[in-house]
Length: 381
Image (cartoon, rainbow, N blue to C red; front, side, top):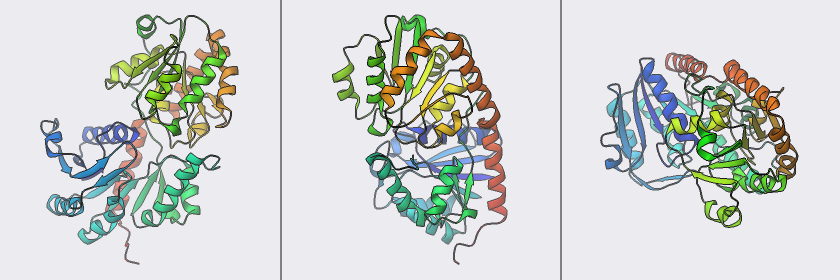
């Protein structure tokens, strides 16, 4: 089967990881994949490493981790590319772009089945300005999503929210994010030695408002973890400069920056005594699943589906309010009780193996592809 995948390759974000992991897994299972993404033509030169994979660049005016603005001619170029390629199915890993709204019409004209993955983070309780803004994104997209043959979401919570906003239930399919549990696995790490840490804690993600990293840093400082305890901040983003201004002089906070090498990230997660995700809004964090797969004890807020992932003893779930004060209590417990963090790490790995493996994710996706390609939904009615 030939899949035309419309997604994202830069700048780095969860959508980029999702597209890379899923398309690579599809190639390993014998699919042919054409990756269409917003890029200048020179960005795709020399990147085709697989005989069954090619890339098609689409011009853009602006792109960020959150939003993509295509050029005026990108829609026509996309339609012409799909007409020429004649794939069996189009899968759009939605990039929050105006092109997302035109795609159903383009695919309907070409008689191509169309599947979407809807990524935006959410907080079902809408307790903050950030979560309210995310809710508006869901309201804006709901009418459009109803025109896709199927829409993949990551949790029942996300599905229920979209149904309330008018997306037909039969359109929505829950396929949680999955992680490669052979690559992301417990193992020997040199991270503590490299970072001169007795106890190591890690945050990995964007440094942006919805990730609430400032609350983590404030909670870390209030916990007074003492010498030998290090907090590694992995990632970059718009708040990096301001966070460093207030916390950059703390010798126990390590600003690692973006790690593009999987081996380096895995080594850090394997060596960590705790992984902390303080987000105000989330979807289903791949960074959290990667840490869990590496056997790391995890602390995360109940934003999006992350609380569901860590429920029933697989980790520590925080309320999205008062994150700093909760961490002030929990972090010293993690510091002083290595047996507890070892047990939570074991439970985290078990949870991923039970529910969130990439292999199971791809098998569910294959089943969906078969259903849609054999029984495409008529969008004209």
